[in-house]
Image 1 (spheres, one colour):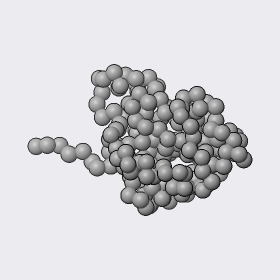
Image 2 (cartoon, helix red, strand yellow; image 1 turned 45 degrees about the horizontal axis):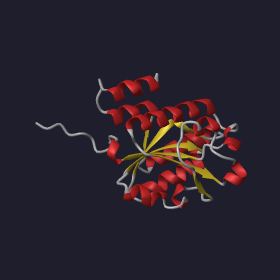
Image 3 (cartoon, helix red, strand yellow; image 1 turned 90 degrees about the horizontal axis):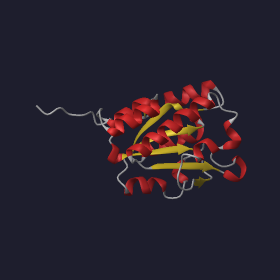
Image 4 (cartoon, helix red, strand yellow; image 1 turned 90 degrees about the vertical axis):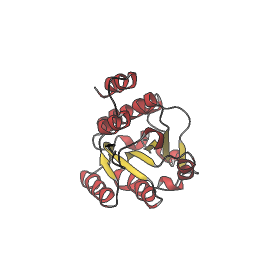
Length: 186
């Protein structure tokens, strides 16, 4: 008997990481900002180790500043700049996901109830599976964070954690990639 994998389990060849608006000027106002940065860096390093594409956006960088320096050290390329709250308005981002067969989008960033939530809802409306790293998103207020996770889940998003995401993408242990990811999550 062939064992089937659940269709919601992340597959490397169909996954991309989307980091939403983790910018210098608003970061200090966020709850659990250190955990947000730590887990986002784990996602970045893990996705790089597995050769999976990473995208990152900046909301109105003239006013809110650039992506925070801790993340910029790990990221390659330039941020996708946007004026809309949803990343659906960020250049051709959704089209790029579709054109590269990235059907499963892992989302992290700030704020949970504004840019992240609107992006997740728009991705879902456009036929993408979205996995939200609950330990790599945050807001200024706890109620906004909690309600946003509930709303995204109720609308079809998978709410999970950084470590769960990385181990799903690995699928098997005992490989060099497994050893690299294990060092990242510890």
